[in-house]
Image (cartoon, rainbow, N blue to C red; front, side):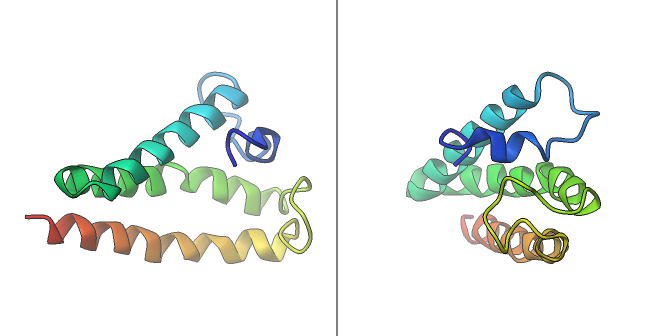
Length: 107
């Protein structure tokens, strides 16, 4: 979705991030795709899991910004509400845990 509807992500990029919001959106989308491709390949799965961990942690400030800003107006209902933005924050934690488990399993 970073490449199909980048405006959705642009609005939650924190002001303090370097570069344009669109550049941050596109780069973060590219990193997410790279992480997924790396996890999908058994030989690169451990590196992919690490990329995913760092990505999930790296995009967390945008999710916090979305919650503080009261949601994302560009999102379809009910995902545009402040409640949805705040509910999304703890959902990152199981994704980080999943990626960490994949990382550990690839010894």
